[in-house]
Structure formats: structure tokens, C-alpha cells
Length: 299
DNA sequence: TTCCAGGCAGTAG
DNA sequence: CTACTGCATGGA
Image 1 (cartoon, helix red, strand yellow):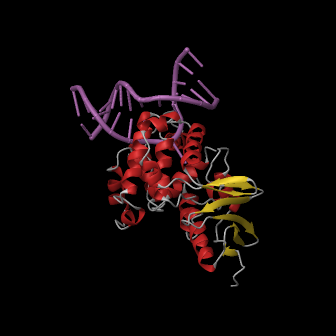
Image 2 (tube, rainbow, N blue to C red):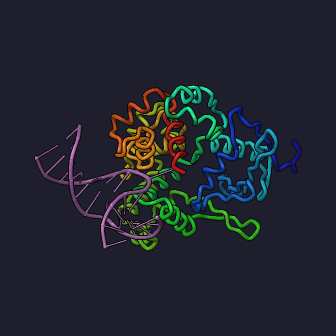
Image 3 (cartoon, rainbow, N blue to C red):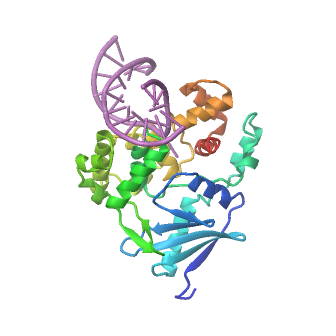
């Protein structure tokens, strides 16, 4: 590898559709943390003090990552590869999941219909938790608007081709905010308190992605997360599937999930917790993916 | 106008 | 344990 090289290719896994993944990223909401144009994704890479902008695109049998802004090096290309691999969940073999789907009386259409859709992650735990709090109990359009205000006010950015590309703010940047400052951005008092509190425990090192990962199993991770004020069962399950890639998470209470399950079961009402548990029973070890695929039926 | 959205914490029984 | 309520705002 030469010093000037600024691209690297990742072989595509067996069951993978870049188009399905892009469909998720670009399903009509205004996300401020990446941008999509001509089937290419632009994303600032989270290496502190060394800003870089990645472009991810599909080329033949590979995903190509190009560092289009900032210095490239073998080390940074390695980090970019790790990041994209987590983001697109490239190291997972979906065949066992598709086998279960194929046997399901109502979901056997999914392996074909949504073939290659991956669990698109949020590799950073702090960002994932904040995003959950922002999204709690409000519609997704408004949630994206709130996130953009937060990011544009308190995050750093790089400018590339006269467009700004933002990093999510660091915990320390949000920990010092006041409720009043966030209320000016139209955050509710409750959301403001939750966000500032979460930023505080991250800034203090009280909790971290590494510490959480050391708990090694889903249940203690859920318990630990739910000790944080503002983090309930929905949020804890959401971040475990999106950030730590736990495969056995069900976002109970999620209105979208309830609506999808209700529709599949033909209930005409909200499913009970037990009905959701029963529905997921044959998907042991793939619950998170089933949630993602059920959400896919809604968009 | 009314209802509710990818919830949570607090309270009452 | 379950059931209920207040929170806050904008979309549909």
C-alpha cells in the first residue's frame, strides 16, 4: 500500500444489498450525520483531531471506502474499514435468519423482498443513547429536526465541496449545557434533563461502551443501561442492537413494532407483551434482526 | 381540532 | 406486579 492510496475495498458478504441498506439510510428523513448522493454515502470519520470524510460506494463485488477529505494512511483506512463493517453489520451471516423466516407462515416473503438488508448500526454508544432520548414519544420528522439543531449548535464539522458534514457532539460538550439552552432548541424539559444527565455520566467515565461490552451478556447490559435516568426498556434494547450488535433484543413498547406485529397477526389492536414474545419465540438469537425487518415493512 | 408519535418516570392500588 | 398520568411538540 502506498502513501498516497486513499481507497480500500471490502468484499461484500454473501447476502448483502447496498440498495436495501441505502433505502434505510435514505427513507425520507433529514439525517444530519451522513449524506447520500448518487448511491454514495458521505460520513465524517470519528478520529479525534484528525478529521476525515469517508465516501462509501458499491463497486462490483465490493464496498469501496474512499477518504475524500483529510489525510489517508493505512492505519486510517483500517479504522474506516472497521467503522463501515460495524455500521453495515458486514460480518454477519444472514443465512440462518433467512432459514427461520422461510419457515414462517406469514414472513416467508421477507428473504426475497428485503434480501440483503442489514442491521444498520450506530457505532457510537453516546450518540445512540442521545438519539433514543430525542426520538422518545415524538414523530421521527420532528426528532430528526431536533437532532439537527443539537448537532449544528454543539457539534464540530468539516466542510467539503461547500457543504458541512457534522460530527455528533462529544459528551463534555453537552454535559455543561443547561435545560434552558436546550429548551430554546425546542427540547422538552424532560428530554433536556435526560440528555444533559447522559452526557454527564459519559463525560465522567461513569459508563462507556467498553465497560458495557465487558458485561458480555444482553441481560446485565440492559440492567446497567436502565440505571441511567431517561433510559427505559425501549432505549436499552435499541442501543444494544444498534451499537453493541446484540442479536436478542426486542424493543418492547415500540409503536412501530407493535403496529407491524399487529398487522402480521391481523389483530386490529395493539399486541400484548405476551403476544409479541410468542411471535418472536421461533427467532431466538435473531430477535434484533426480526425487529429491523418488521420496521422495514412500515417504510 | 383531535389524536398520537420508533417512551419514561413517578404514583396509586 | 399492573394501571394510570404528566410531559411537550409538531404532523397528519
